[in-house]
Image (tube, rainbow over all chains, first blue to last red; front, top):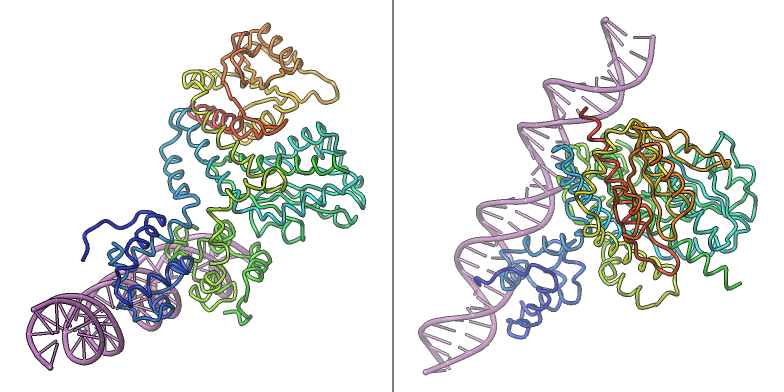
Length: 272
Length: 272
DNA sequence: CATGAAATGGAATATAAATTCCAAATCTAG
DNA sequence: CTAGATTTGGAATTTATATTCCATTTCATG
């Protein structure tokens, strides 16, 4: 058994694979080739499956893992699994701890929000479907008027959208609910609605979204989960998962998404 | 046990999840939410891990799987594992790829805002003076009422502060300028004002800040440069430099700062 | 407030997968 | 061609994980 340390990253693993491949005996070489060709399978397969894929016995695959510096297959698989779901390590539990400790210094809290914000932003790139984003931009570019709907936690997002659209001269209406006056009836066919809401979903937002659909207006949603009512209503949905510290979210990701959407729409409209 | 067929695709699963989520009992709902928020983890985790993530017992997660139409967790995981390889390659390279395309596609623009947001957040930790932050928290904790002032680009920040303070039962007033009615005169000695403004500084915000100082109210500023009028007025100043893409800023850093400030104040008030 | 039904937690069990072991086969060097 | 070392296949064992079961709690209903 080799005593060298196990690779800590997939890249390091791939590198070692390249170095050693040519010196491996026949069956082990088959394993190496198979893994090199199908790295994505490692995280979700069993030894038996991978061995079958490489056309070797499980025990041979086992030896291959050890040859690469791991204690066994499990350790190697763990590398592939964590590397994938590394998106955000264990913020959930880390923040839970923070909650118990009460609130430390304001600076520490700020650091937490900064950290969570960064993670949320990174994650945003994978949670938003580029195709959906593209479609949202097209829909909104064609709309006569864009209606902005979002209350409570979502209101800052819609109010910033209103600011951005105003600056770019895109006709838009911010539904504020002020004075209890509703503007549902101003939504017409040919208009589009951007509805922003996160769990627990605001009733008022959903009602307006429904009204919009009845009028035949297009619906674009900025929401958090695939189970969101807006997704089920068939809206063009942009998903943002925002982690929370205590009961609050930093909204960093939601804002990045919103502003990118607004600017894209503005640019697209300029052209025509 | 339900006899309906197991979903054959992830989409079908998501659909069913959406349909049933609201009718599920508490613990199973937790499972649903966790899976909706972390669909990618299902492929690479054990029941125990997912259950821990959803904060339920493994047996509860098991029942959830059955509720969704699978015979058990293994069958459900199999579905997620087949899909897994599809999204594997692009998760790391995605961002890089998007950047290459220049500012053409909405996704590329989103990538830029994400990048800029991250940079702004990093910057924030160095630009905010911990002592000033500490002082701001103390000042605001003692205030009878907190007045929130910020217009145009700064308005989303103050509106989120208003939301946070409401949720924590901290008395606060959001100065919206609605209907042209000003509330300057409601600011009294013993109150505090959080003024948010970035270059070019909003006249209205500065006027209200001045009025506040005349009344002997405390002044906390969230602004961008040391040359900001608010700094010169002697406000307890928290500096945020937000990078921009074109004419727009992502506001990620401002939000992180604002929410950290709000939560600190809320926590501090709880104690007394 | 009592009663039955539904939901839950945790331990017990069954199942599947990883890992080891060793005899048989295959190479390598003299 | 043969002795020793290396590699291999497959079965045996161990470990991890999924699944079930049931006593206890929680919730809803009359």
